[in-house]
Amino acid sequence: MHYFIYFVIIVSFFDNFTQLPIISVYAQELGGSPFLIGLVVGLYSFSNMVSNVVAGRWIDRWGRKKIMVAGMLMAGVSVALYAFVSTAQQLAVVSFLHGIGGGLLVPAAYAFLGDRTKGKGRGQAMALSGAAIGVAAIVGPAYGGIIAQRLGLDWVFVSVAILLILTAVLVFLFLPDHYQGAGSGKADRYDLLRLLKNPQLNQAYLGAFALMFAVGILTMMLPLKVDALGFGSALTGVLMSVYGLVAIVLFVLPTNRLSDRLGRIKPMIYGLLLLGTALLVLSLFSMQPAMFIAMVVFGAGFALLFPAIAALVVDQARREERGRAFGLFYAFFSLGVVIGPLVVGSLAVAPDQGLLVGAVGILLMGIVLIARNRMVLFVSHK
Image (tube, rainbow, N blue to C red; front, side):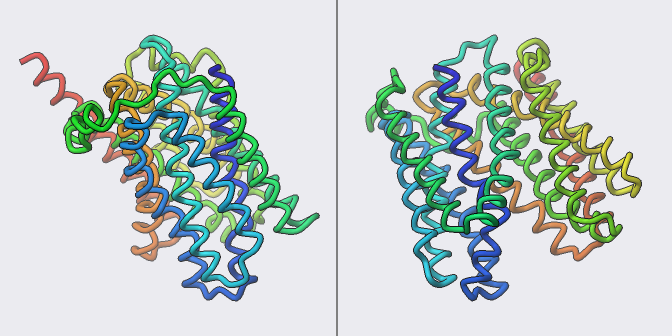
């Protein structure tokens, strides 16, 4: 059943990744101003982040499967509606609804996966889920771009909507959910504030924020650097694919057990160090070989960090609160990918400087993680 939930995770992220190469162009074709185009993209992230937090309580109260199906159906209907909008304003509204559906779906899938894994295998299970995300990240944009070019945008939206709805039906029919929900009384005893006060979960949430802070800055600044160097946009795609492929390979090799063997914190620290180093190398060097090496290092950092932080959430959250714990986890994910580009954008810096800001930020967060971990160890041994 693990493999089925990995398929659900692929579909969950494939939905979003197929939109990356086309949604801004679609908003422009509908007559959207630069502000409206930004609003279309931003509203998805905003509603997704809010939905992540709100969904947690429902996942713990009513069960993983019910919310998973509801989120997948909502996402499927929203994607189908993209094909029928006629103005950029309508597109923004549908994007908002789409974000809510995705915000319900992903935490429910991860809470389900967390329920099905045991202590020593949690890191490996989360690494394999990371590989599922990586597959979606590589296949999704290519699918969206190719189908849009050959058959038109509507075919992308309709085909992805059909995939989401069919997967929702499969989940409803075949996915066993042994956790049926805690009911209103029991679930309400575990609130978000208590989770946020948990020092171990704080470290997982910091790691989630840092990871997507780095990804956000990389996604924004790497294309600008490549363009400024005159290498052409194709190189950007190849470089991003390199980091994705390296991460996937490490997710499926025996390295996926590192956080089970070394504990959660060491791989988190090493992962942040590698991410910061990769951004630093990209900021300092303009030769293609150096850029490829940096992307390999970035992929390795991603592969070390993600399984450790996701497994740490499973370790520290009780079954009755795991939906909320993962809701917060993915809310920090969304926050990181928004804050990273916002920081470097507000500084109005050149690509190299933006990458350097990202490197410094990641390394500082690594220092905070080390200090926080030592404080937790000191208090626990006191």
